[in-house]
Length: 88
Image (cartoon, rainbow, N blue to C red; front, side):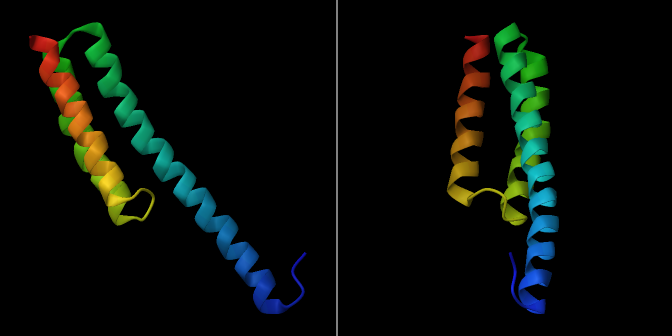
């Protein structure tokens, strides 16, 4: 339990920030899942469309501090490779 006023305030701030970050991370995961589902279904057009929607969302997660830049780049790269392989 927080002992000082400032510590109590920090607890409130952390709780708010955690909720926001949770929703942002969830949003990123949703977009990634849509790409993976499109790839699994074998629909190249849908996969490309989903990837185009997911990439800016993943990068937005970086600017908001939810995920690391390299992690996001790796995710985008791997998703792009999987989408590319759908047509082949």
